[in-house]
Length: 353
Image (cartoon, rainbow, N blue to C red; front, side):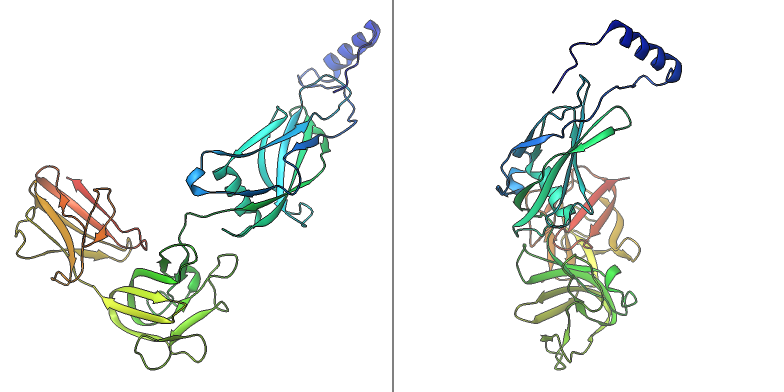
């Protein structure tokens, strides 16, 4: 940064007079001329960075630059912009701001801006990075640095989903219930949906949007659990609550109706002999019951049988098919809620009234 070493006392007096009389309500009057923008130092353009959910809070990289030149000693503001490579920063993503000459990104921070800029999870892509300098509270006298390109491989912790539009919700893929796969890149999907008559399955587009015109699947006409993309039929269903499983690679599906859910166990009034039926709320998409429980054990089961039941292995509030019995902490009157609406993230709550 250059500094003005020789300034006459008369010039300073004039500046002070003008600043006092013309800008008495502005404490940020700066006499400076932009003479050179910031210069990026590290990382080198072309650097490849693979981000990881396991290292979310660890630093992924640190962007360092040389100071911009304003031909005056003044505080300089720096803001970082990131954009999909080749877009000429038409839709830049804010990468942070500072008064220092560097900024560090954790894996999570860099991942967030990478996804926002348009990169796809687990696919390497190029992002352009630049720094803009300015002075004063109004970010005046902006100067733009050179541009470097980073090759970023982002990640996602969200499971891929497909939509289930149909008569149950007006055949609108954008608002339809979702099924989730077991992991990114897997073709197996599952989830619970209240169905009414006919339905289909719809994949998202590259941007993650669900709409007609995307890949969609229906029954091959045999109604034996086989899916096809072309010449398909809508899948029929009698009204009820279903557990759906779909494999979009093997083109198969199954629909098991589990409309009746109940609470059973040594902590319930009828013990392990019979269920206490829960009530479905279509607005919250949950089952619930208010019931007196003792400080014993409970589970959730479907259709008054043991073929399909949930417990909580690990006591983490997440349900596991056939999992451990759930411990009731103290005796009392409880509101128990079973939430199967979030695919592969099935949960419950026990609220003491």
